[in-house]
Image 1: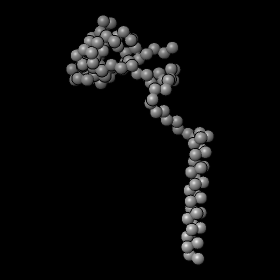
Image 2 (image 1 turned 30 degrees about the vertical axis):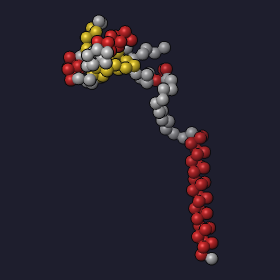
Image 3 (image 1 turned 45 degrees about the vertical axis):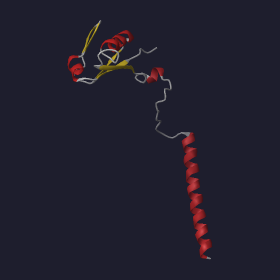
Image 4 (image 1 turned 90 degrees about the horizontal axis):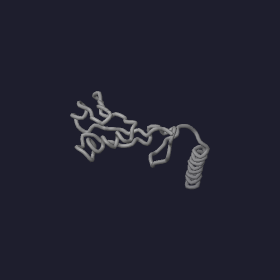
Length: 115
């Protein structure tokens, strides 16, 4: 099973510049606004000390879609599929048929009015 990854987003400029300290060492943002943490206990520690439960310098959250190919589960986020599918093809054919039928109906109605 894939490891859980947590995203740590800096909420202050100080956090971006100084990083965060953990029991397993210092994590540096390297001038970026976010970083990933692979260890659940470190993510919990960061959240407790510098996260929303602590001084609120960072925001920590598990990223459920990072390894979505290995452990995908539907979580309410839209997934887009590019390319044809049988249901899309049928829906498009039905739409085209309705458009053509309407065009024929309107043409027949105009010719009946002219007579």
